[in-house]
Length: 282
Image (cartoon, rainbow, N blue to C red; front, side, top):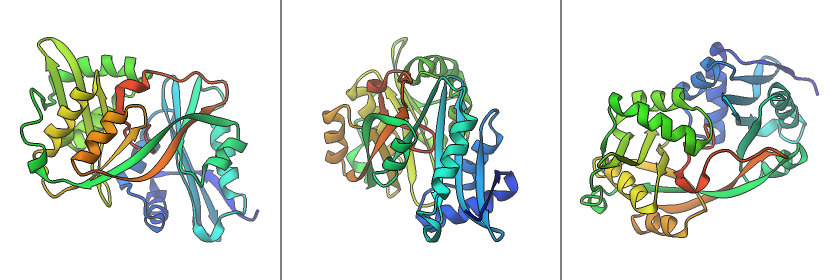
């Protein structure tokens, strides 16, 4: 295998973006920057003849480590680059209590050979928002402000199963129009965040105590974003939630599967996570 493998730096972000664009992926430079700047996280770059041909990234949320951005130039696939990148990341995460990733059907065999096992399936749904479908459905949901964060981060530690406070704070700063909270008197019923992308916006995570609260949060966000293209990556754990998404215009685009290193305990409470942040961030 005549390629070089090294740690990725901020100066390599344009190379990472080129691979994303070639693959039709949605990431922005800010997404790459998160991996490279978050403590104990990072990425690797494979190059050949001075040209970037592959990447793999990882993020540590204390107890949970997440693998992402497994990209190989189409002309270089099936040459062992993906396996080598994955081996490098798994080695860097050898001491993590739990390691996971979201796999496409094409990537699943590679991850299985490397000792990861299936957790549960998800689907990407996508829609061009028609705001009129959502007006009147938001109930008491309102936009998140700084004073809400302590309660949200405490709940998220319980539901997600690890501390992703820096991620949620960054999402609030990047896309405040997608950050909503639902309270019932003093009871926190749910919250959502989102972010822009190169091709579409992503709404997620959506964390809620029940399907009705998840619907209200999504409706609150979408009621003011007419004409925007959005994706929601939803665990296939609540058929009625998926049916509601389809009823308001979201079509299923593709499946993927959440996988974990064999023997690792699944963190958090997946049934209360109605949308993930995205395959990049768990």
